[in-house]
Amino acid sequence: MSTTDAVLIGRYNPAVVVLSVMIAMLSVYAACALSERTNAATGSARTAWMIGGATASAFGVWSMHYTAMLALHLPVPTRYDWPTALASFLCAFAWALIALFVVTRQQIGWRSLVTGSAAMTASLAGLHYILMASMRGPATHHYSAPLVALSVAIASVFSLLSLQVAFRYRASAAAWHPRRLASILLLGAVISAMHYTGMAAISFAPGRRPDSSHEVAISDLGALAIAGTSVLMLVVVIGTTVFNRLHQNRALLRVLMEDMRALSASARTAREEEGRRIARELHDELGAALTSLKWELESIAHMLTGPLDPPGVASMQEQLTRMTQVIDATADRVKRIATELRPGILDDLGLIAALEWEGQQFQMRSGIDVHCTFTGDDVALTPDQSTAVFRIFQEALTNVLRHAQASRVDVSAWFDDAAFVLRISDNGRGLPAGRAEYGRESLGLLGMRERAALVGATVAISASAGAGTEVVVRIPTTARRGSAEG
Image (tube, rainbow, N blue to C red; front, side, top):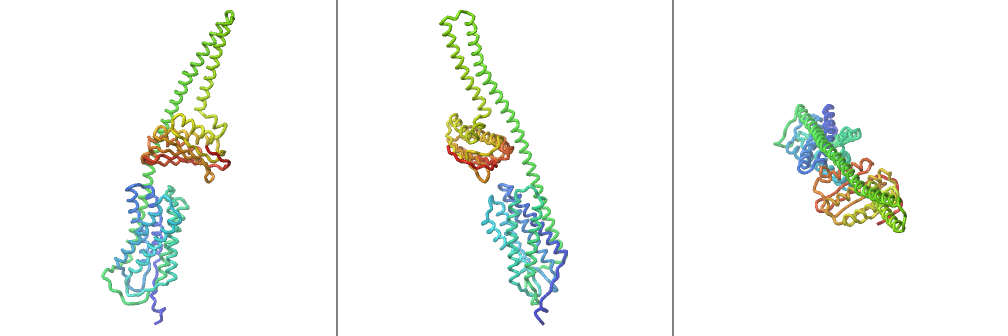
């Protein structure tokens, strides 16, 4: 009997093959959805999503491989050793856990990608070949080293691509984005190619049946039950992630709506208070000045009705001097009020000069040391953008005065990748956890973000209790000229 005649030729059930590919694609989609939910969760919920997600993803990938194995029918009875099959599931769980751990990190570089994909490749290859080792029957098997190496290489490509896709779309709300779906279909095809390449690497020949007390036979109905259960579980997992995303978005929308209403009410209150302050200053200071001028003019007019003797002329001169002083003081008050409404220096000398001037004024008013370092004294921002940055700067300084209990504020501005960046940091008490994000007590911070969003800018606020607060404003620009330091 020749070697060729001794080889057992198996056949694949096309329907089960297609089913295994479908499970692969569902598994990849579920893994991406679970990474998104794990990344969005915090605290104990994050741990629960991590463990539950790893278990669900592992079962999906394991059942895909098992279904694909059951698609192969050999001309001899085939059974499976269940402890070995269980060991292969542990490899699948390790693969899923590593994937979720890597893609839910804050940053992911090439070192993390390479290390994570290498660990995932080892787990995935272990899953496949341990699962193959669970087959029991009157046959021996041999592996083709080149095909084994090819299957491991495909597993490596799959692991690297899956990490990149999951990390890219982990914070995406577009669950049905065409590129995301195309990536998932590609990954499903790649992992299926890895499995069937590994299957092609093995050849069977008649041999003595190994002894085993843990063998179980799986019929076609059993294979269908395994595949159906995995599909049902993956659909439930995907549905759970979608429901959780919608629930979280609904809760977030409700919080944002409450914040918007509170911010709107705060803005109305601020406008009313500013209107009352200006009206009070106009009435108290300008009104008093005008009344004084009126009295002086009436006195001079009364003097002009009589003879102009030297004492009368001297008295008129004194009154005119007082009137000049009142006019000068009134002009200064008008200039101050106008400056508070909109600093003329912002229009006349530009944003950098206005920021430095405001920092000096804040230091004079509060006694808090302000140190400014500005690089790029000529920024190409629109008037609306300059105004928004200036107002955000004012609000940040106001927050420092009201809440920070700081003794020093560091202000710096520079160009970074075609963006103008303003950074304000203090050495105050910082903010409790969560205050930098949402909440009615953070209306000033919310207002800064909303003002920035209107002109295409972003505001990043980082703070921790006792470690001060940092506000970074980033606004797109194409200019980069000059430098100044103050």
